[in-house]
Image (cartoon, rainbow, N blue to C red; front, side, top):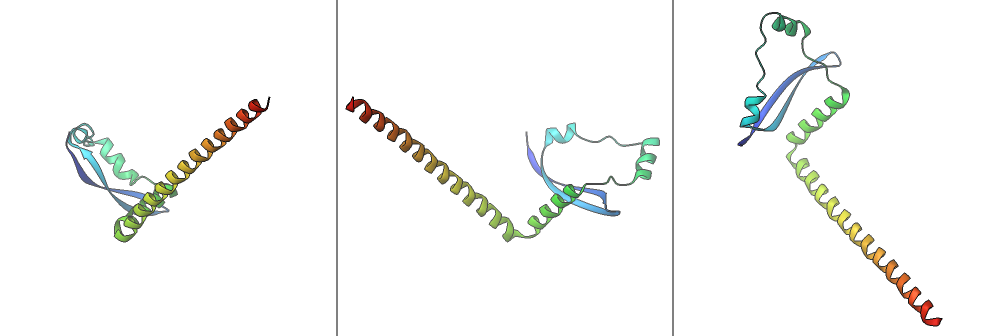
Length: 120
């Protein structure tokens, strides 16, 4: 299966205005053939023309705006990737400290039990 980047442009309605969104997605050749939309003819084509573009929610619009902003700002994309990597490293360090602390607590309990048994 061969994958390639495909630019998808959609026209939708948001807050009474027509908004065009552009996304770059990965698409495999087999999936492209299976998902090929059928041409609308006759009454279906007339209804689609009358309905106009579909409306989108505020969340979808915000996500689209954020993706567009990230694509247009190359430095921001690098900063976000660095922050994500840094956050993952800090999370791993935290988990390692938790494991060490749990081991120390178990060790202290074992030693306390041994001392208690030795005194008896």
